[in-house]
Length: 512
Image (cartoon, rainbow, N blue to C red; front, side, top):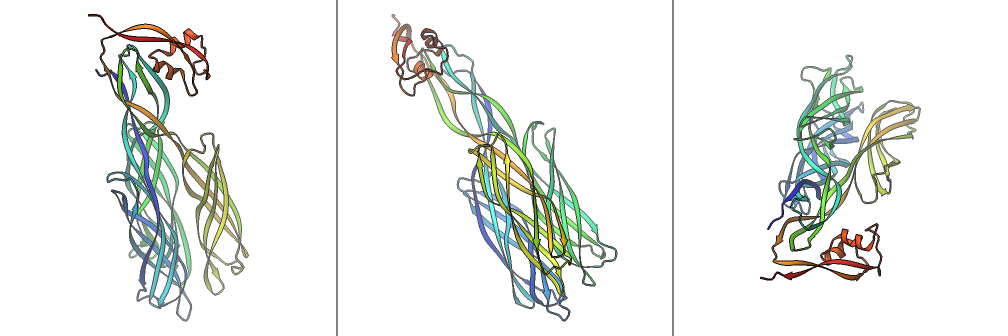
């Protein structure tokens, strides 16, 4: 006979597997006929995009591209500075143990290095080293028995647990578009370099929707028809709705922004404006905190109970933390001698992350690329600036899972003769959670018995590892009866060798 039970559903979102792979993307760039020959490379940079991903059995396929910007010194009598823009496509397969088709994944692509080799005056070989990572999640709905209605003489060991259950996840694609004007005195010749950052991220929760808002911070370096290097900056609003049913105001949301495609080009027929179009995918995982009454064990005094017990791993204690870090550094470049700083790209990298009770300790470095004017043209330099930062919170312990995303909120670089005063503000967005192991009980049935229970008593001496619950279950007694007869005030405090009187129910056949 099945016992009548009440069940609570928990959706477990857990990492099935993750992997990172370093790969090289290589291609040749042919110099356009209208541009001068290449003498040497001044700088090379790129913006990675992921336009397609697919989770398969045991692996993840990622298709993407790199918008590459190369600035070079021309082989002409004026030693002019020119640029080349090209797109390198790539496909990468990453092995992830345990993943299956239909699971959800999050990917990250970062440029580690770009090398350019001049093959001849009209041809350049570009080799880009990428760090591509993938993390795959499974969503499993689990029913947990939280109460038994027809208890009769069934004894239950309960434990209150607080866990994070996935409400739902979803994504949407949005377009950030704008046309920005350059100085009226400038006639645009070519776009030399582009930096794009997603900043000022925020969310609002409404009925069955997550409103995600941010800004695309776009910096463009361009060349005028009279060979002057200029720059222009703009912020383009990003806004999108992600549909997630039953989401509430107290939900905890992890939102990710990923550039799928990028178009930046001079406006046709207009030499004073630039067209920008970024296709961005916004994805969201939303969690709720649930208090569940977990039945860890049970037995019947008068009959045998049959049930299955299994172990599941779920998320608990999830919180999102946000803190700012300021970095100040003086960079010395003697050859600048007070000349112009054309462009700066600052990228933070975490080198080491240590989680201790109450805090996360970060050791990292800022990779800063500087493009600047020198007396005979343009030069570039890469500088590594170390930083250390700590985030403190009472929710952090050594068993926490930590995911960190760093955003450059502000970067100011002031030229003072041969020195550059760098003031950088980083925003650390940290997701903290722990893995909770639960032993859950499935369908419970009772075997009918014709035995009659006759009350008796035994004397028992407590052994190491015993609890009142274990003793009561062993002798088909109850915790209340054992504590009452033995005058035990706290059932959690018994000790080895202690003598206990155990009221026991003895089974005997009923006379016919």
